[in-house]
Length: 426
Image (cartoon, rainbow, N blue to C red):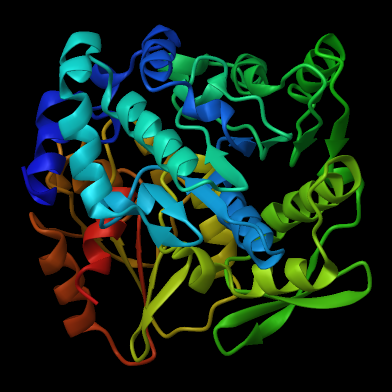
């Protein structure tokens, strides 16, 4: 098999959660441990940082990877899902996994794969851990796929655990109360391993305190420190202040200020509590050049100017709230929103937050989880949101650009799939 045939085997042969949803979800770690045993436990051959949370865990993962790389370490980065290329999921020092490695890994282990029948996520995680071990990384930043306690990645014993925040998402798997969801995320807290909590709520803080006490793990709450403060935008960077110093961030969404509070606290804990060292210069450069260092895309990403086109992967209520707040700081003549969602999200919760004055271009990705564009448009009409439905994302984006004045703002959002496909158009 060549690279594309290998990827097609993964997609066709194994359940892929981000494409088909709940039918691909395999709770529990039995498959993962069987895979790790067969592969000689690669997860025990490198240090790691483990990151969970409802929103922000992808951004925090990339920030931490960039900072550690600038500190002089060889850094693995495992995240999901990918936007354009499968290789985005598995990186070493910002470079996507070698395509030949993907091909050879599947070819070498195909009998075991057929026997164990892992999910797509379980297998790609095993591939990532094997790659990091073979590449002899100093440390790997590992993003949780879903939840925490029963997530495949929860076999690692990291030097630091991070939980960014708690919101309502994947409630059918994680629970329908914030405390239940927090308990699932808190499942990544390990015995004696320090944990940084980004944001808390009255319902979630006691959960984290109880779990950290139970595991004898020191807990650090980022919100108890000074908050980073937005100053202004300068070209393609966001200038902000923290502890009376000014920094630039390569990720420019205002919601990144909360993520940055978590990043600063996590970096301090690593510096103070582990054998890894992060200099002020590495911290500053990693934050500023995070996108160039790690290849991160789709977080309030400027795709073109005149008209201004921005893409953001937010896809749940908490994420959309952050985007709506971001829009308050933007200057434009008309706001045009290209949006598509998957059917298992809180559609009505998202629609209730979106601005009524915008022009909408409803669309959907070509995946089973996608909510048809016409259905999304019909639901949106109940919230006084009006626009046209498009079968193809390229047509939705194309029409938005054609109809826009050069002073308009076009926002592409609502789903990783929509943003991922849109990125290929620019």
